[in-house]
Image (cartoon, rainbow, N blue to C red):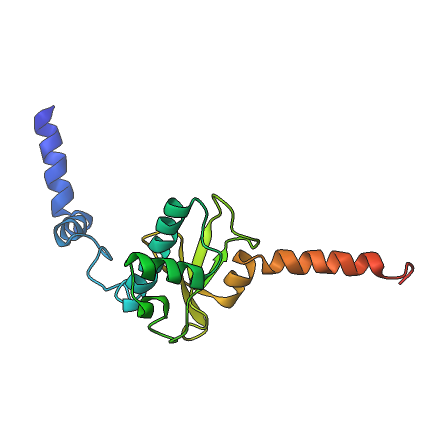
Length: 167
């Protein structure tokens, strides 16, 4: 039985399909590494992630997330945890924006989001508070995550309530 299995394996690897499979295995597969991730190599990623990590440190120290980037900056400078320049994007040269994911006022346990004010090529880097990962998103994402679509929806509902009936 073992002898037959060896013969089938040998036949497979000497067939055209077997040679292709063997070549792929030997080369490490197609598309596995090799290329650089342009986002990971952007220096802005490490820059914004540091500020996102400071958000979590602030919340741990104070028991509540910071209400603004200025409040976070003042605390971090006083504690010696950051420099003034670390709160400004390396790409758009503007201060980062800090807001509650989903909108509202920061409360204990709120998921905080740090992002660029303008960004580059209609995209902004963002990182969630305490995260070691940054991603690049478009403006529509920030409208949704900042509660913009929810606020618009509530405003539209309020306007409909005040419209005269029959229109």
